[in-house]
Image (cartoon, rainbow, N blue to C red; front, side, top):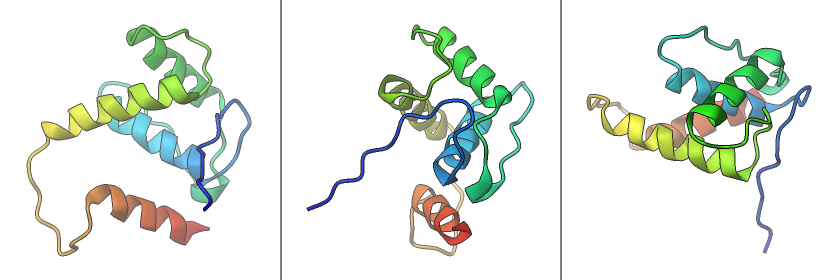
Length: 109
């Protein structure tokens, strides 16, 4: 059995996992500038570092700008809480929205 462990992300990393992080940050950042994503070619740029640091500071984490396990868990928990308050939207798909996003990102590769 193989288990995929998410990698820690830092400045200049490139990939779909970077795009996924940027989409999460954009969803949580309702009053600031949005990060531009570019699918599989998304770059963990300075704007991403700055938003990760801001999130870390706001949530009592060490502000390194690195997307590590602690930051990943905190962002996912905050996103889950954020999504609880969104209005219900019926889609034609039987998949959860998270799975739809995952599938769309996989198709970019």
